[in-house]
Length: 63
Image 1 (cartoon, rainbow, N blue to C red):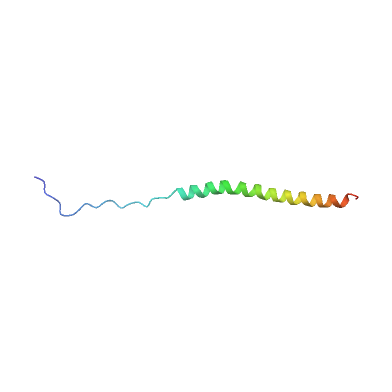
Image 2 (cartoon, rainbow, N blue to C red):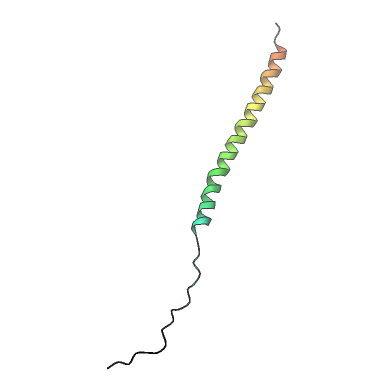
């Protein structure tokens, strides 16, 4: 015959879970946003230079 224990068993302390998905999401966002921002800046800079060149060329044309 078994005798019931009077003290309940304690569960081992839980280790804090490391949340990896915010870090992974931040890395993916950086990998997407940095090239997109670079291409957008390159587009704007090229468009600005092209507009300036067209304005300068328009001054050289005799009318």
